[in-house]
Length: 361
Image (cartoon, rainbow, N blue to C red; front, top):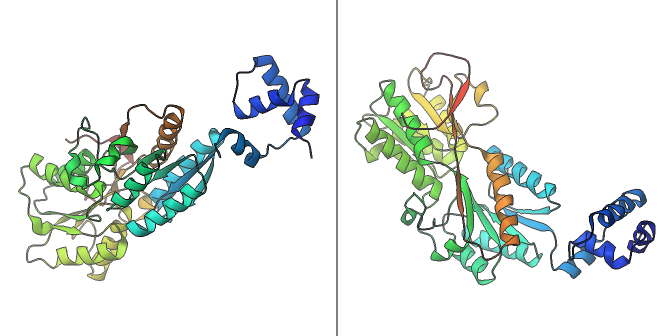
């Protein structure tokens, strides 16, 4: 197996120069750098990452903590994170916090003990212990999907998240939530629906708060009153959403249209409708937040909001690398636009599938 000394002899440079090329610890002339890289390729030299980490105090690894990795949405986020990490020579250590604050803190502590250079985390509904740990140990971190208190210049109200003030030190990236949800509501209202229900996510998550805000915004834009009886929490998962949908259907005046606030809850809503022998959209129109690979295979095809999940993952890596390069720069919150994917579960005639950026109309 080739050694660093072998590379140095082949390139005609010192071992120290090879080290500087590998670790970016000192500028090296372009010609010299290319000679070293060519020697590495020719000899098949494999750097000792453990030794490199001792020199640089960096492991070139990123800790990723997201719940429900089996969820297609988070799977696509993982793909975006992995692609961005590999592009910049970083490996991933992955953990599932299970949306449980106590377990979340444990897995983040374990990732920290593995000396990852930074972390990307989709926080739970009660992330105060997590945020306190990350802040206390100055761990470079990006929060994704769920925000943990936005900075004061963010256009959305931060008070809804119930988060710790320490979150202002962290970068965050997520999709737009309010206007896309409102677009689903106004679309259903435009089709004549006056009782539009919402199966909302887990209380305490910023995504839940913002999609509820979007639901109410859409009702107001359509001139419809808000009726709290038409909002039920499906806790961001299928079984709870099935129960929530059943409760809405049991109302004396049930909804004629329904918005499910994520893909797992859409499955639960469909199960509840099937259990009662109700057809979509004939008996109840259905739209959902989160598009997924097989949404076009349902009958009817699901009208949905598509989140830029891979882009969210890639942007999280970019924000983290920027933070590692400039630890003292101001924190940033990035919100990426969603797309309205118009199909037939809303009750519209079948048409060639198209998606548009979500603005309330």
